[in-house]
Length: 135
Image 1: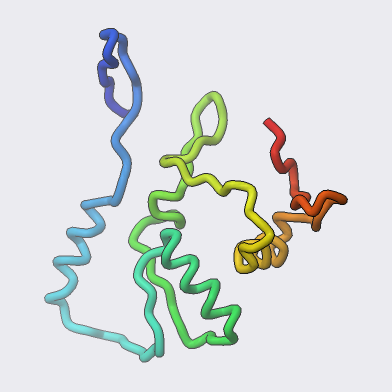
Image 2 (image 1 turned 120 degrees about the vertical axis):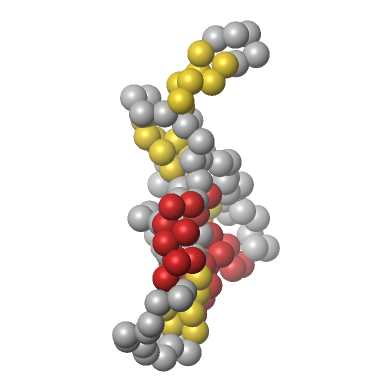
């Protein structure tokens, strides 16, 4: 599985190029010309379960808006914010890191608290979290 690439020193790097599945995309392109057998109406349609689609759905749900659907082409969610796994463990496809937020960033602090990512504040008004800051 995968391909062999060469690094700058001439050594082999085993891996693969990942991204959107063009074969599925081409099936969708062909399907546009097919007759419609079934349809339904929805007030809001979100295309893609990357960070933008997930965020849009999160805020719609939080606002009490439930007449929406999210469509995803791939078999996994997250877009380029997804992760992979190899013998050494889990790793992100790209670097998406969340710095320790300042107290002025109310929306982010609320999000972290609502989703139980933080557990409150310590005596120095720093966020507590699940393994926050541990290497």
